[in-house]
Image 1 (cartoon, each protein chain N blue to C red):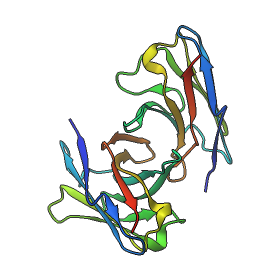
Image 2: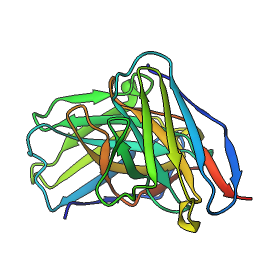
Image 3: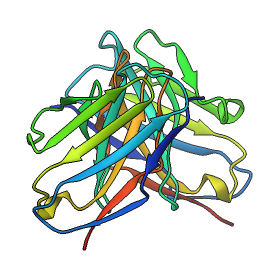
Image 4: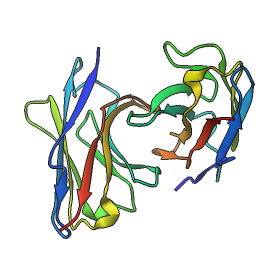
Length: 119
Length: 106
């Protein structure tokens, strides 16, 4: 059974970098035709796709966040990460990692982790 | 970006009733449309994909319809566990979500 688990600091200061890791169990990150993605949900409840990394290693980002986002796969191939630079209060949200197939919705999700941006 | 618009924002219904939620895309997404259910403190749960195909383990009282830009999710014989927020999502052009419809107890 595929499981995803987010981890990382719950509090980040304004202008600093948010860093999260998603640990994948029950499947390989190298599984063909699979995207591993990050989605966030603001306190106002909107869900926003942040970006995804394809099994080939190619990355795809939401244009609204592209200048600040980096998604990478760990060399262990069981984790992928999110870095979001220059954060503001508007980046406060629950961050989820999830999996999608090619032209497919996100079918497996982590439980989510709340990140608050505050000094 | 494909903008997804859901209506209404809130539906107040009684258990046992039937409800229909609407979702509109700003451009055609073919049948690349999914519906999710989210309860407080939980991640979204995939209900339907391909506009009308139920995900594994989803009861038959959940059904979906539509293609192109207009979609609907219908829940018949509403159960207590169905009171939640429902989101549509297009995956024809990356992924974007609607703003959600809350189904609450009347």
